[in-house]
Length: 152
Ligand SMILES: C[C@@]1(CC(=O)O)c2cc3[nH]c(cc4nc(cc5[nH]c(cc(n2)[C@H]1CCC(=O)O)[C@@](C)(CC(=O)O)[C@@H]5CCC(=O)O)C(CC(=O)O)=C4CCC(=O)O)c(CCC(=O)O)c3CC(=O)O
Ligand SMILES: NC(=O)C1=CN([C@@H]2O[C@H](COP(=O)(O)OP(=O)(O)OC[C@H]3O[C@@H](n4cnc5c(N)ncnc54)[C@H](O)[C@@H]3O)[C@@H](O)[C@H]2O)C=CC1
Image 1: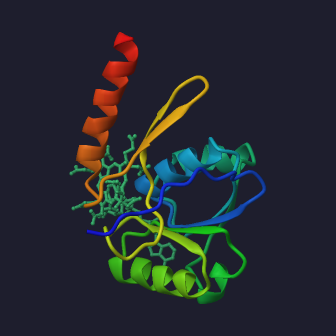
Image 2: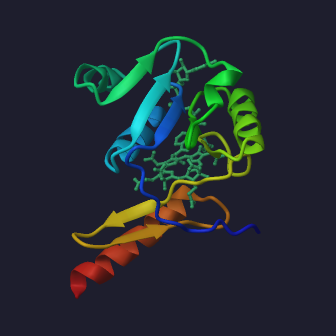
């Protein structure tokens, strides 16, 4: 099974594209914003109302239309966060061919960057990733780490 290289990246001033405006896209956007990323969301339809707050407070740029291939250019990271598995795979292939990091919410394989289950301490972080891409197990391991940390 493939091992993904763990790396902690400074996202401030990085251009990130999130394609899709649903529940999972919103969760990914919140995570990325909490690390200071600059985010554009491209989606023909918002399916999580909470996005409007982010637009109002100018935390994200919202572009209300379907994805176009040229949207990939110049991005540090692209998140394929639509409910269309084929499209998310296409986004991965386009981005990967341009050496762009691509996360994809509808796969364990058609992506070159995975999100981790993260415990954020006051002055440290523990990020957990499973080789098989099993978020439930990643969350269980995170819980075990948190119990250990809290018992110390
Ligand atoms: C491969 C990966 C790619 C990626 O998304 O980066 C991926 C893929 C998929 N996840 C799916 C489902 C769920 N994912 C979560 C939660 C999280 N998923 C995260 C990471 C990853 N998920 C990457 C692998 C990480 C690793 O194992 O190392 C976390 C850790 C980080 C984050 O997303 O920020 C975050 C917890 C954050 C936190 O709370 O701390 C929940 C629970 C919930 O939403 O509450 C469910 C519902 C579960 C259920 O109900 O079963 C499905 C759909 C399966 C289906 O429909 O069949 C796919 C696609 C597929 O498996 O093909
Ligand atoms: N990776 C993860 O952590 C998780 C992944 N999933 C998977 O993610 C899938 C999608 O989840 P939700 O966010 O709930 O879907 P959703 O249906 O709420 O949102 C999908 C979004 O994609 C947009 N979209 C569709 N076609 C588009 C296009 N051509 N260009 C731009 N945007 C487009 C839609 O307008 C909508 O805003 C689920 O079906 C499930 O398989 C589910 C749970 C967690």
